[in-house]
Image (cartoon, rainbow, N blue to C red):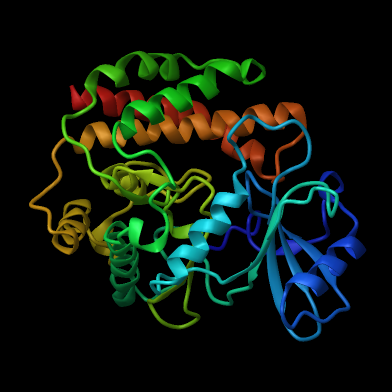
Length: 352
């Protein structure tokens, strides 16, 4: 089932309107081959950064911008998105081509960048009901191959040596999301989040690695080929940085530990009947592709990511309260917050 609440584009929402003529002038000056007239629509998805479809008679583009209003420090880093997309394109990783970045806030009110509109399929349900049962495993294998390939990219060789700080990824991430959670008083508190904030720092596993991490690698953040189990573009790089690959993979793996909430989850699904790989087999495929013998401390990595995702939803709750949430579906993600926090704490108890 396609989630019509997130799919598609329509009229630009009142809070995210801007001077479209000014944008057209900028596009004419900075995007090779651009020719108007320009029509602007807003995608229904995009919880953090408003995302627009820019339509011209010849072709369409996508624009991502920072939302208007007061923003938390370090959030909505669209400049980083544009940078990592451009870098990954040089090694053939499936991303949309970036045409330009604009930091001049006088154009539309906030910074933005423009990239190709990649045509294909986006799946909003991890069970892939639109796909024939015997083909679903191939789509999962394509995701597995893509994240393994990302984690094998030499970040320094593509100009991303300073894209984040190497080492101590979990300490820094736990500190970052804890601070954002505690600082956003308007969004309130959750008892399981408070428990996780106390538990996580003392249970970080030994060992560290550094690579490019996407930060939000989910099936609904990928554009697949219209008819083939092949990824044409991985979307939504706002949370990307240099970090621990196993943190990134465990975030992707959360689909096996979550029910079907606002984002895709597989808990309660008969995987064999649905033609989907078991969690252990999916982990083994990633390990085979990345040269690992297995993943120790997987329960910690999952607890950390459930906390992190709950913290992201907490941030959306704060933006909803302040009237700056980018998507009309923000309230649905906010409703998932206590469920995610509870799942995170249960996962922490499993980790011991």
